[in-house]
Length: 321
Image (spheres, helix red, strand yellow):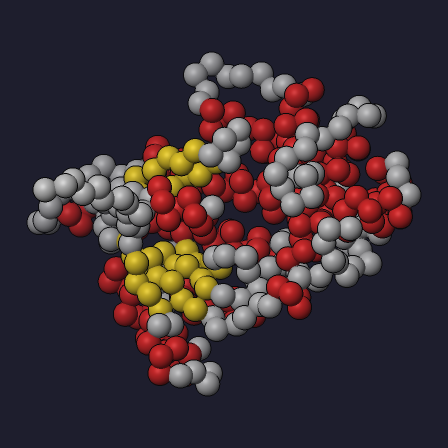
């Protein structure tokens, strides 16, 4: 994902990246807004060492998502239905369940419905069946999952835990599956707001410009980012108190939407902020967050980056002479 964005991005656009059935990257243009939008990247200075915390964080989420796909497949598809093997770390994924489920439960295609609208309808159905099937918010034991899959607990460990080290007594399949399906839906919703609900171009200046204020539109975009952060915190549980604090401070001082970025459990946050609130947000972070931590001058200087969607890498071919 990161590499695709670095190569295929275009100035002024978001990038819709898909890896199935093959890699595609489509720019999605950001419309002109009033207030103008800026993106701030804020470093939490919390480091997540995956070699140390992987068994309870990153590795565990990979295993839980694969288990959730296998559990839903066993519970909802005919006995003997095998999930397609894919390039995910364990070869079994919620995307594979998605494909297997709709191979047998085809939705009627509405006349004129786009590919994205069809995908949105499928994701809404998957969210509903997940809520109806994975009903235990406390998580599932190895024995419970193995029983549904028709394998022994030892076989379950061989399938899901022989490649990745994990430490858990219960596996939160419901929360992880809901996060994955709902986040996929939010991607489509964000793209829909950009492409189908964009405001008409505002006049260059003058009294009429005030009438073309796009604050409500900006907030619709921001609400999607905020929902992602809520889900990362509550369902996928990959946020951190410091991440939550940076997001809260930003929202309190004018950010439309704030969320973590990257693998989680630390690292950076991204914030969609009106250009006239950039100073207020950065000053609030300094006052309420960075000043309370022991940081070097170099760290303080690089803590916040103001950014706008830019172009990806390019190759320049020089001709002899």
